[in-house]
Picture 1 (cartoon, rainbow, N blue to C red):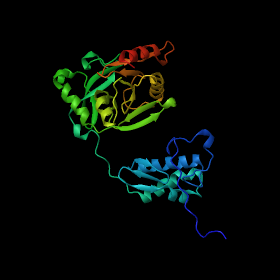
Picture 2: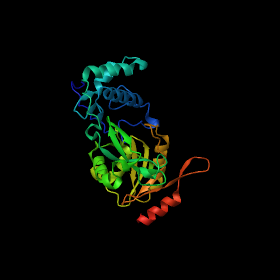
Picture 3: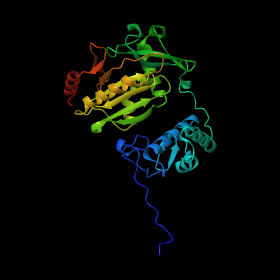
Length: 314
């Protein structure tokens, strides 16, 4: 005679690639062990739809678990309930249904304070493309990047064309660097490449992501790492900066990964940044490790990269 009860099946461990990454190509049609009766691909799409719906309500998710999504404010959406409600919904209507369900479950978050509100009328240390302004704007950091001052006016960062109007960099540079430290911390994401190589992506909504180059050492400390051999860095646009902590053998793979990222990133903001990768030494100096080929494409300079890392002791 069959038993009247069944022992609950244990929840499988999270997939190694994470709940918000595409499942392996050979597993997209497999049953999803966390959100039945969906397939792995359908469950992945559903999680993306819930994520977007939460972001639309002002609640960016911070944690995806087997059966739920939890935001920074503690709001939790039960994904099994979302599956139940949307199970019979046509695929083309599902995203709208998910958004309606999340709107019923989750209150609209109040708008956050503007990222630059606390820095109104203050000077902030910035980084611009080297060819944008002349040498009077600030020191050349590399053939591709120049330091500058920006001033926050009406919650918008505007490049100062001539720092002499404010007494020059020598007079205001220290306070401008302090202002960078007052900016809201960037969102930090880790990106895994083949071979276990890791990139770090910093994103902001204040248009001053490149300014974080001035305080990268403090950011490294904040995320619990250090870079005795330096970092590879790349600026995609005003709201995104990526870096790799140099360890030696993986540096060429990391440089190529950063170059792929920076050349494929969608442009954002008024100023296009050159798609180059730099080695940032522990003392803050920037040296390009990419070059523009005769056909106009940007490529990794493997010989330059190897020599620089060798000089650092990598």
